[in-house]
Length: 312
Image 1 (cartoon, rainbow, N blue to C red):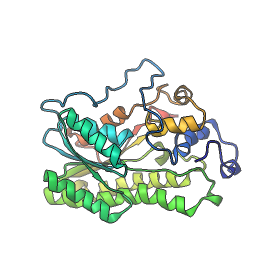
Image 2: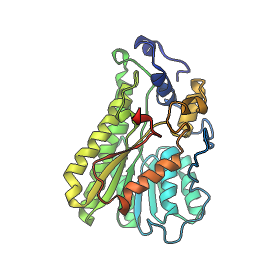
Image 3: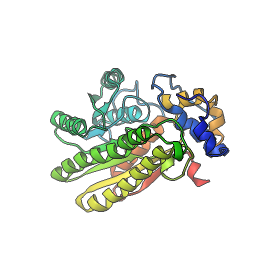
């Protein structure tokens, strides 16, 4: 993977500070294993971050007690934090990811804290695997109340004229087609049982263009659009569909990207009004809000969880 801007990214012109930082956050993360660096807490100011659910005992009579929750891409980062947060609040969680060792680890940590979880290896690019994943989880728990479609990937930076078709297809298939495939099966189940809630993971890149990451930008715009279309089609049938748009979040992917581009968390934090890096648990809390009864009138919207970046 690149450790500095490629020739193709240079050909797109000198990046602005904003573009440079987001290449570090997005393009620089391509191909990095989630275990590149341990994702410890980042504090660039005194605002209190959210306590991780990991290690805390399951809440008695949690607000999602009795609910069944699906999470894709939950072997690390935002997906892992969200799976753990739902389980802490009493939900029965089934989740997927391609990295089986990490998936089993997350499953064990949830169970050790008194939660209920099932890891199933699945690749959201494969229609048959998506169908099997959803079916297996529902066979285990009997229904599906909430789904968080989080799985995603990115490719190395390239200007459009030199963009490799293989990279384009992989990003679009994982992010956009993968979200569509998941929603197809989730919605079919929710229609049969009388309703449910879906939250998709979009991105700051669903709202702002960043040079040299065309596939990622396009795929996240697609997720935002899919969310709105699904809400139009199914809100009257008691299925609420929304999405969240994170910016820089303190995950192993982010830290790996910063290492590759010789940037620090503090340097990136200065580009955000909060003046700190958002924690995965904060995204999880936003997802849980959209999935909760408190958001009963919210459908077809995107929740800005960038830490204020989109206000600029």
